[in-house]
Length: 318
Image (cartoon, rainbow, N blue to C red; front, side, top):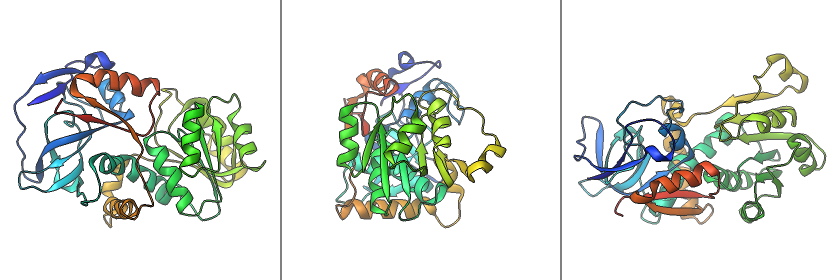
């Protein structure tokens, strides 16, 4: 089968197209004939071995696939690696049946970005109706879903941040009440201004660095910042627990794999709700572009440069 393999860690240049033997599913696993694979910003960290889970070489990257099992079951699934290929083996526990009315791109949007947005708002930030919600990188995969969910679940004000007029317009189209330039020099002041001069209740942040520091400073009493990525590759200032007392604020981290350890099949609940909203026409995925296996280096370059919007997918047939 055709696949992308990494034999040394690094940037987009380490992604190489190769021919590999078809994988074989073991106990508790499913073999999937991949119709589309998801492309995520986390994949760029995986390629350089700076991701939360350390990788071993050689490796086929890619953490999510959509396709069919040998018995014809249509699924979308998470996997630790192996997604950038024509066939992939996935754990049965992280595979979800895809409703007939949901296309591959939308299914892939929901299994990582949608589930992440759901968990950030429901579990990490515990959003309540009427609260203000800041969504950084609002034109990205998680951001586009989070804006829609926050609005649907009764946020008093959804404040989106994005780096270009086009991205800010997209966020407004998806339901944001106001869109802020993410390159603002003083994000604390920009967020308070966007919230009518008031501090904000919730911030969803995957940027890191100064943006995180300034977002924490913008939180209202009992405000929460949910941190789920570091796209800037810059670490925020370590949080001083004493400083959280000043406004009774909280900072939470969230990594999707941990949700599978929770009782009550939380991720399955999230996926059922997300697919239901999609089928009801109340939630949509934003296409961000489709790449062939031969174009995977360009895909990673686009991700790293943050030129993309919405959901990116890989077509292993070309």
